[in-house]
Length: 398
Image 1 (cartoon, helix red, strand yellow):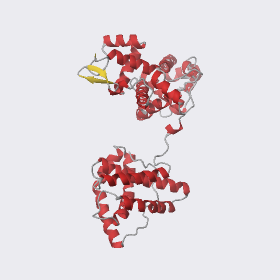
Image 2 (cartoon, one colour):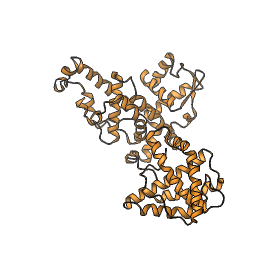
Image 3 (cartoon, helix red, strand yellow):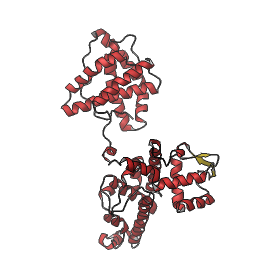
Image 4 (spheres, helix red, strand yellow):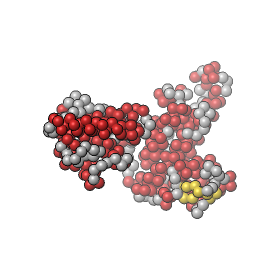
């Protein structure tokens, strides 16, 4: 995906010092070269996302303009490269001209970030697709020039909602990676799996294996979900009906950077499993959908009271007119839904991914990244489960 997801600047035609005839010939050749790989670039940048495809197509005007300026004064025929000297010499004036055409100082920085990000995207594309026709040394030097420009502008990627999340202390992060209940359970299952355990055709535990695993972690439901998450996080690999510890298994349970990443990956997969459980429209699927919203509110630091979940369906049928609208069994259905949702919250809490100690459904600060990644991964799927207006409603309105 392109790194330069800011708006396109109004002016991308800075002045050049090349002779007019040379400049025009270079511009024509560069245009043909870029047009030749435009479909490939769009596919590379967008990965099938239509809105990004349009954005990627728009980036190529920047590429053509800057490549023309740089290669008009470079030796040799135009090609898929930037030479370090001209790149360094012309990037500053190019960005100055872009800023001069911007609406105000704030817009100028956004426009400059867009340009630098676009050039980095193009350079990355040329490198990854093997189209770069300069030297390896030139590639490194040009990358350094662009990285320096990006750093001077404060980075080229727009702020992510993740940036607003509180950060754990070093001690909190290390303790979570080493001692979170879900990590300890996973370590126990990895030790139990040993050199290899027989599994069924899709990698799930066999009935006897599930019984053994449940004895280690507390229940069959927990064992099955943990095992599913471990497979998704590649802590367990499959080989001809046998499950073995994966490459990252040795790092899980430590406190260094790799261990923290493995714990985060596993935590993410556990939350994904909880938020996608059940078929759309089923009670389990609806509970998973509401759980997604509850966790999303917790990420926004606006957690739901646990009491709202625990009392879901208790005596609310008359107040909401549920029986008239949905039938005499609606209140009982709602109560069952509340119990299922409460069970999921309690399970995530037992695993160390939710905290209700103050009466609110919150997320421990060390688990925020894991939960955030889970909700981002499942954002598209959530639309299949959730009433579009649900997020704007309170639980007592369900």
